[in-house]
Image (tube, rainbow, N blue to C red):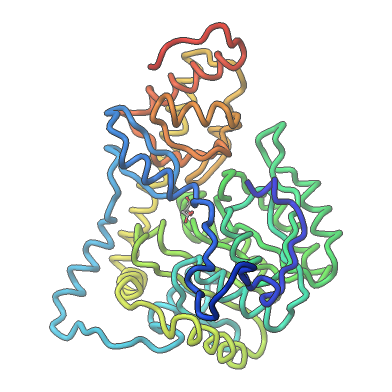
Length: 432
Ligand code: LMR
């Protein structure tokens, strides 16, 4: 959990090189590997696949599932694929280092509302993770001593990416356990107190893992303190459309920072809002003066990491966003996904209310986007996985998109039983 890692991590790349003490041969490089802990989200996905329990539920990974629990190919994406494949000249050439221009321009318009090359630029990346990596690599090159401030908690990979690059990482307060909402005063104060020129990682919308976003007024205050402290906002926008159901609305914070002329990065992922998880479609967008110089530097980093991005997913996104009909269809697809998630929040809440599960569960309805931070204890989460075949990480985060009409009652019953058991251990019952 990121909270447990709340410490300053300053790791120079060279300091992290591993030299085996028992090394006898100069070329035993492959024997110097150190086994690493499994990545919990992907480990849970594999355990879910292997589980034979017909009642099993997967609410671990942040991936949309339809109302029968299947992954969903968006109708707008399906149509774009048909159109692409009907082109006899659909080829497989390399993209430019900066990526497919019709894609990066569309990505910029979606994030910042403009693709004016004098104001903004973008390079195609390996999804949002790659955008964070490339942005982080650039920042490390130009400001190796800068500190990245992450919200507490955040997507665990943020910590891993920035520390792997060699940047120093600290946390700002974000989530208030008592209210299952935003600790706005803590967030504001920590950003204000951060050393001038810090890099502030912000979830643009639908915060992962908590589902808690600042209000418009709170964003205004945060952006003004970022500006007055000369910080650098690095937005992670992996869920555009999932917070409000309207992509433009979800870009509020990013566009507001841009309108305030704050230099910024936006790491954009098209995994969730296009359902293109495995195609790894993303972009690193930037706004500042001297865009060409910046773009040239960032392109050199892309070249050294993966040469240029993959073409297929970028072509699909470009086709959808640049075609009026498909764009409209995509907005309907986003509304379909976000409204089903909202319905599941309500249904889960209603079940817990009907069962009179001890506790206040209103946060399930108040939190937004794909995730809910349930507040379930580590021990309940462990039992949910082991005893009920309900797969979720120990943080208690659930991907609400993993619930549907067939499994939500079972999920609520498991939670109800375990919450009661935790309150009164003598009531322990057998497996549901
Ligand atoms: C998640 O948080 O579940 C997703 O963003 C998938 C991932 O890569 O962790």
